[in-house]
Structures are given as C-alpha cells and as structure tokens.
Image 1: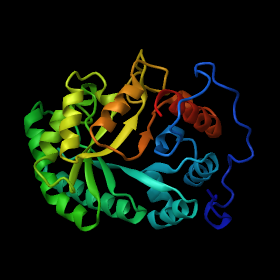
Image 2: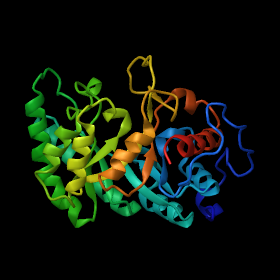
Image 3: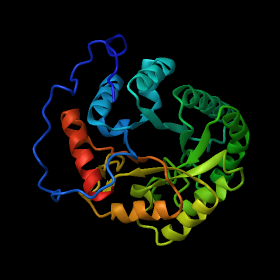
Length: 309
C-alpha cells in the first residue's frame, strides 16, 4: 500500500517507516496460523499517542488494511481532510466511534444529544464508513431506572435511524460490560442490544460484538447466532481482559493474549454467525500509550496473527 503524501501529513513527529521492528515477543508462539491481516483493523485508541497522519502512515507501512477512528481527533483534523488522508493511503475506515449517550431526561439535553448524533452520522458518511458505534449512555444523575433509560434510547433511535439510513450509515449499538451500566452504558448484554436493534430494519440499526464486554456471558453463542441470523452484526472488536482493573476501570483493556479471553474462539463464534467484516483491535491502556506507537502496532499485529487470525 502507498503511504500518504506530505501535503496531508506535514511534519508529524514519530513516523514509523524508519523505525526497526521490535524483537520477537516471548509471549507469542513461533509460526502464527494462516489468515494474515486481510480483516485486521487497528482502532485509533490502541495507539492514542499517534496523530491521525501517524496512524495512517503506520498502518499503511505495516500492511494493515483498515482503521477504526474516533470523533475527537477526526474533528480536530477535519472530517473531509481525514477522509482524503485515509483514501490516499489505500486504507478503509472500519468504524467511527462514537455516537450515543441517549438516556437524558432533560428535554434540552436530549435535543443536544440528538443533534450531536446527527453530526456523528454526517462525519461517518464523510469518512466513508457504514458503521457508527453507539455507546448508549448511563443513568441520568439521581436515576435508578434502567428500563426507563433503555426506553429513551429506543425513542432516540427512532429519530436517528432514518437520518442515518439516508446517508448509508448504520447505527451499531455496543453493549458494554455491566460494570459500566451506571455511568456509561445501560445496555449491558448482547440480548439487550438486540432487543433495541430489532425494533428497526437491520440495515439501519445493528450491534457491535466486542470480546472485552461480552466474553463472560454464557448466552453469547446463542445471542451471536440470533444477531447473525438477522444480519445485525455491524462490527467485531477485540481486547483482552486483564486483572486487577485500574481505578476507574476504563483503561483496563489488555493486549491480545495477555488476559483471560479465548480470542480465537470468540472470533470463531462471530464468524459462525455469518460476520465477514473487519476485526478491529481496540485497546484502552496507558502502558501501551506510553510506548512508541510503531512498537505497539508491531506487537499488536503479532498478537493478532497468533491469537486471532
């Protein structure tokens, strides 16, 4: 793949092409299985220390075909400019994160959330991705009503789904581990996500299968089959579960192979459900962010080939 032209990335520090690959990882067995990087996508948060041009250059140089992007750095760079940058490198955008936060009770806050989600849909369309990941939102301050919060999500989706469909963008509900239910996402299981998604056409609202959030659920296989039978799996994301969790728990995702999740078995279940799209590695981890981006990317590629592909 070609790398981006200098007119787009300027003098971004820390480019990857001149750096040697790190030594072999002793945690990785020799001789990764076949499959390669055809479906691999690197989520921007995994190498948060990189600018958007560095991410694109690094992935293009490493033969990584896709990137998952986040709204804040895309907005800072400019969505149209970011789209040109990615296309020039021969990459695809597997998803944009995130929309959502749709549980507000206050009418003004609800109106603002809907407007922000319409902007997110427009950004996804500009980037050329069909998948906008939704983190649905936690309980409003002072509330203990999970069912009411989920009902408000359904009401918001009814307003947003037609707008997204007109722009060829599908809303992808991501269930988050129950430890996030109070403050971040009242949709905690794949079954709950599907209950919401199935209120709408499959080409408008679907779900995200994220190993970090779903691996513990003993109904996972049946719910993935349910999602697949309806064509509802819009994205697959991976990170490993490591303990102890850090304070705040958000930044506790582990490098592939460092934790408890049977990652290839998870991918096999998603594939068995009929999903054939990108496998996106999304890791929130301060130790990874403190390292050289090129080193993290090379390690992540090795781990993907060993534990997932």
